[in-house]
Length: 576
Image 1 (cartoon, rainbow, N blue to C red):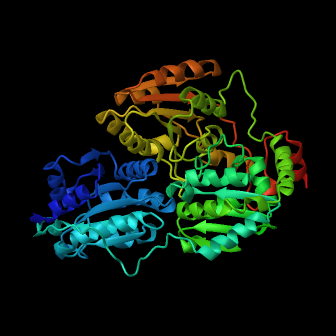
Image 2 (cartoon, rainbow, N blue to C red):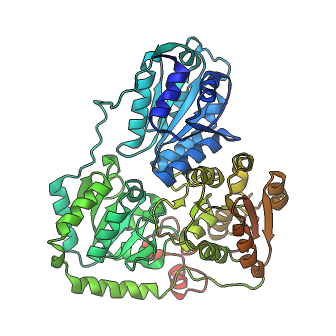
Image 3 (cartoon, one colour):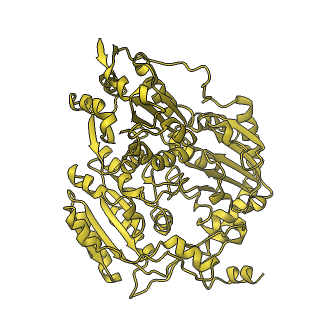
């Protein structure tokens, strides 16, 4: 079958089973857009900014585990995607970004809307391709999807010059590809798994530490089985929330900079740590020199470059988390009785003492709305059965702390890059994937304005997202750091000239509501969520002085947390 390059591209996407393309047209991409128009198997979602396209595709990928697909034009179309590509790269999300390019003979001539797409995106993609021959297009597309989804997933860019999309070739989409230079390992080494188990069985103060890799690899069930078998205390990174049900009695909550007291103290004091799909980033470890000083670490990760990158590892296990955990669970069936239960029980007694601090407790106010209270009420009204996206800042941390996740892929946020503006377009991708489920975007007055134009996309496609804007008139996390570490010099963190978010939402054709005192929270949320088929923007005026606790400051260890004001231990540490 002889087809034009643009039609070959669309047929490749169809053969990959792609459901949605998130994109924005332009001159260099018009042949492709014409091919999209002439078919009805794939739906194109017209965003209002290319960054929104990448975040929507990313949200779709995080919630479904499928590949998110983006289509943009050359030049500024490409450069507008870079933030979203980097966001997906940092959090290992499978994405294929198709970028149109100026005609081949103009590449390098500074043609209209030309940029070096391959050069610009190289640092923040798993791989990228420049298509130079229409006869290679189908094979390149197959390679792009294979690279994006195999091993440690990530975004792949395919840059296609306009003349390639107009040329013709025989369409033949390969069933498989073999790339000699790329052979990811999924099966862990048997001897290393055995070594890891032996160390776990000898532990007196063990902890299981899970990251986003446990979610990405669909290892939640195997992970929960491991936790229930070992009955070891377990904690999670921001990206790993939901891999272990929050209600599991072994779960200590999130760890790291804003983690619970018990999880951070357990990480500091443990003697054996099993790290599953986690990369020991700085927001988790605190000061590396003070991190878990007496622990032997067993690390499971599909990416060999992530093992031992930041901390020394006793037993490295390279492999897919799910595959490795299945083997571990099978081996533990005959070995679990070797665990020193008396020592582990004593360890639990210590942890339970730490729990009595209730490090997430906060003081209610009958005049000012506490953001933590709003998140807890959100959990109550949704019964925990919602997809929660967030932007980045204080509201993100409160969502992670107070909305308890029982399932994986329900918590959709930008962890590694920390991208403001992510929440709303990501919610679009999730809502398109799950049109009958509740999707909530928890955001802040600064973050929401980064990609606010996507409210128009939401109206066009009838997406009934619920936007909860925790409005404290500040870039909240910036203000918090300025309060703690810059002697309250609030340099450009106050949001002057905020819009009337209710009127703004209404101007886009949506429902807008405002909450200004604590007594209104329950009723307004109930009304908002009763509107099943409308996007509702709830502007909640919260206490602008509220901070996120606990907090590990720069240069501090897990045992040096800054707890809420009035905590005796925290005051003693500060005086010391």
